[in-house]
Image (tube, rainbow, N blue to C red; front, side, top):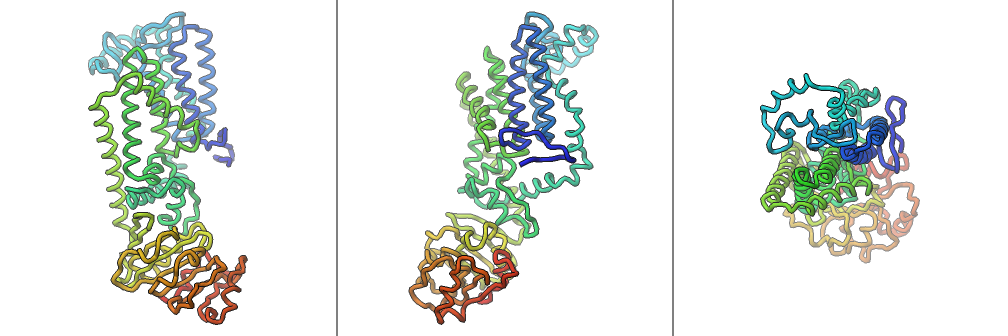
Length: 487
């Protein structure tokens, strides 16, 4: 899929979108910056500088706002963390722009505020050698120069971002994703059901935007697998981030710097997009963190601190979801594979068990289920999309309960055991119920049934009075709720 900005196609490769492409390019830039710092040949130095400019050009051609934020932070980190810089000669010496007097760079333990007083004296003594040393040691200056590309600033201008649908859609998506996360914090919704779950249970009926994921790696993991897995992943990343920084203070400082920048790149990029769709995105950070932990054994207190911070973030996200849910009419919780929808405005004597089959109701059946709950004033609805869950094991309800079975659930569920009013939505089966039970109040079909199952039911006079046809000019997937009357 191609992406455009003002008629200009944004750069992407290997099937990645522009944001993911930007992340891969930053990985390559990190390697190049490490090579520059260990290069003793001035000709190769300028060659690597030229390659860097080319990579930065393709980076800004992606017009990725998240990529710009990530590369600026990582480039600054590259200059501050590394203690050695390249000079315009055949040897490597201390970088006077990054090490003033006897004080270490700001990220190092020995740095003091008095170091700032050394800036002016050293700036006065700058010569061509020291200036090139500083420029080569900290790539942030080259990054900022190349960032003058007009396309990227056009996408980052406040006037454009205010009306940019991708910004508004992201915020709306993330808000719904946080509520999904709080509704299934222990078991999650499943990796393939993150975007699908948002569209079904959180997206407004008027919004037609399609989502395959949640456009954020952390929300994607949390919603898919639950809060415990999210906390463990975050703890792993936090431990790797700070441990890589500690590794920069050892003889493995070059490896530590690369591990630190790769990890930081993935973390920052993950806030703006999901960075797990390709091995090109995951492998660098998956290598960096274990390598840093192998080269420098972590301390137990650091592990505890990482776990504590990650648990606090996971819990904070859960509480945020609860706060957002309090303002909603429908509260959605998933437990043991059953989705419980509580309608704050519903009638206490109306409850429903709904067996949903996407083959009959469409992939976005959740939107119509929510509309069905609201329009029929149902207080509690238990949605089951797995027919293996027996209807007799439904949660106990003191009030009247209505069963709605759709698609293949009609034949998979033993209808004779249901002692409540039952409604059948587009039964996709040739098998008839073994008993002509009076509990079945309605059988709803689209008037145009491409599978011809409707004729199997119409040929039996017992079922004919119960059949309700939805006119061909009304889409079955978005109108079936209007034709349910016996509830």
